[in-house]
Length: 390
Ligand code: RFL
Ligand code: PHB
Image (cartoon, helix red, strand yellow):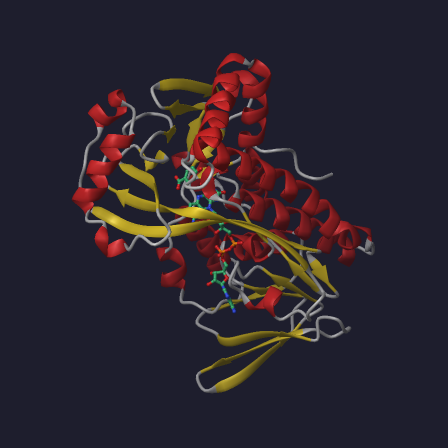
């Protein structure tokens, strides 16, 4: 098989890249190791920046998003007993859209199917080959046979645990990493959200986030120790702990019900540089991870592939200036989102090892936010998303 761009991974980065390339007339094939059902079963992001919404629209996959996405003009911070609303609209003139990653993925899959584009699911032993030469390829096994996809370029959109970054020679990349000493326990339930807007809460018992997917579906998170086992968290235990951590007026609104999904995610900051090796480009979680506090992971993945699609289209139009600058341009934005996600995580969580001084610093930071329009604007402009690299 032969194509122009071989995409490894059918998460949001790979699927959106495929849609944008198709729009630009660039042929592409996606090779994914899991089944389509498995990919759709992952419950992750919920908040889209305008940049992401615009890219989905450009790709022609925003019809359901336009209908069902919930525009949010602000969100709340709760710090011990103090509340602060961040008015995104007033501070930046912009908003974010609540629409689940699962739905984004579903829309992109349907679009790909309707356009007749090839996606190979359940591919085993996927391997990029010859990335530093002129004829790269992706190989995999399926049905007891070896398959080979020849391409001009490979896009590594295969997430943090993918094969593309891992297959590069030692020394090709520099990596930067911070692992946080806690995780997020998440629950999805068909119950109405406690509040119209998201609430990010910090307190004695640890961080909590009240989010949503729709007016009838809630998504909640609790900061938990890294060694907590999922089996130890019954639904009842989760709701009881959430009630303790939410601000009292929100706790009073809490409607509980059976969890549809429950999972624990570790928190990590990670960047691999550069995001290009020969004819292989890395995009999304394959190149960088942020802790979820700033709601940036999916949005960064979308921004990367928005840029990469443009650069590859320029290549086929006769100019390599774009692909030569892809890594530097993408990383400039990635590091700003890394900084914001680290800062917001540091402000809102209980750290087991920073002591009373660390707690006072968090309190001072929150008090400063409450009293400073400049500080609130800095938070708001990062949350709605920085402009795409030019
Ligand atoms: P994905 O989604 O991990 O997709 C990668 C795909 O590659 C496949 N793959 C392979 N395919 C072939 N061969 C191999 N060897 C392969 N290895 C892996 C995988 O099966 C998968 O299908 O990466 P992508 O596309 O870069 O997308 C990134 C986002 O999924 C991620 O950044 C976000 O989910 C992060 N995130 C959030 N981001 C936001 O922007 N806003 C949020 O509100 C938000 N909340 C979250 C989050 C992530 C969370 N978790 C669970 C980590 C909340 C949580 C709890
Ligand atoms: C979510 O709804 O899953 C969500 C929302 C905001 C975040 C992280 C996750 O910062």
